[in-house]
Image (cartoon, rainbow, N blue to C red; front, side):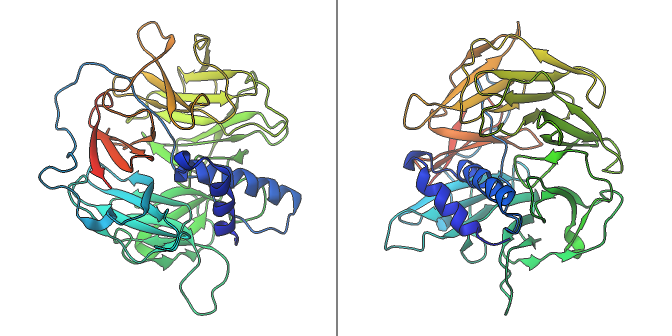
Amino acid sequence: MTGLRELFEEAAGSAPPSRLLADEVYTAGRRRWRRRRLAVAALPAAAATVVLAASLLATPRPAGDEPPVAGGAGAPASAGERPGQRLQWVDTADARHLYLLSTCTTPGTCDKSLAHLSGSDDGGRSWTDRGTPTGLGPMAVLGPDVLVTAAQPDQPGATGTSLMISTDGGRHWRRAQESPPVGAVPDGGTAICWPETAGASCTVQVVEPASYRVAPLSQQPALLLQPDGLRIDGRADRLWIPGREPATGRPAVAVSTDAGRTWASHVFRDAPACPDAGCQPLSLALDGGGKRVYAVAAGERALAVYRLTGGTTGDGWQRLTNTDEIPPGTNGYGSFVADDGSHVLFQPDDRHTFGYRYWAARGDGAYRTVELAGLPATAGPIRRTPDGRFYAIDGPANVLYGSTDGWHWSPITGR
């Protein structure tokens, strides 16, 4: 698993500067990496992307505390205020535990191949540096103080790229100990999808932070797995993971209701036709309780949105037909379930050098364009925490935004 840095630099060099967000860079790098692995089986595995993107529309503001505003009492410490640094990635465990990655953008002032990790334990009121700068690679937050990343171990003679685990908020890291397969995700464990072997898919693995162990699940979904990050979405005692049917390449989703002991799969056979270069990965969106589930399949000239209307496997999926307002695109869609249950889609805006377009389905279920109160059009993608907070980075302005309800936004940090 070598070459992560080369893949990142190649992807970064091909993206417009105003869109140099890590989520998009990882996505571009992963697509190139998968094509290389299919062509040359001996190439080592690389990494999956981070973070499912999403966005919001404006409605009346409900009661609740707003996130801290930059410049006010408790403004961020100097952890991220480095000259020539750009925020690239945000991930959260909950409303209090936030993590940011930043990289150098000014030649001659810092090493552009290194990433700086900052963390906050109080919802963004204050920040501290976490560990020393490391090579930029895929990272995921599994708990308030638990992070995983793909990195080269800082050990004499170590080669390749391994899964690294931190249990103190990124201050210190240890190489994961590989263990024999396990039957299910135990209490205290987390499921991730780790590309440990050459091929176009990843393998469901169980991370046990307390013992720094990682082990594959004995029973794997019968799909080519393509999640939108290392972490597998687990809510309401279910594990959800998107992928493709091996025989046809059609988009599909797998779900487990017993911690990974068994899996059920559904193939979206009426999904739009894909371009010659291949389909984009299926995008899943769940609400906080896992009761509302949407799947978005993007083809070459059309878009299909599906909603799970019953059951826990594939039989309850319904294709929504009221998506005429949403134009087809080649650079992907993200979506999420808003606080009131509305489904919101977003797409990088091809009409401009940077920015995003948003559609939301409310009331009659038709998707219509929306504006997001307080959130610049250049901010995105958006991450929702399990406890219902929302975060997004405005790349050009280098500002992290937050929302407590999904409808009204304010800056948390001005970096």
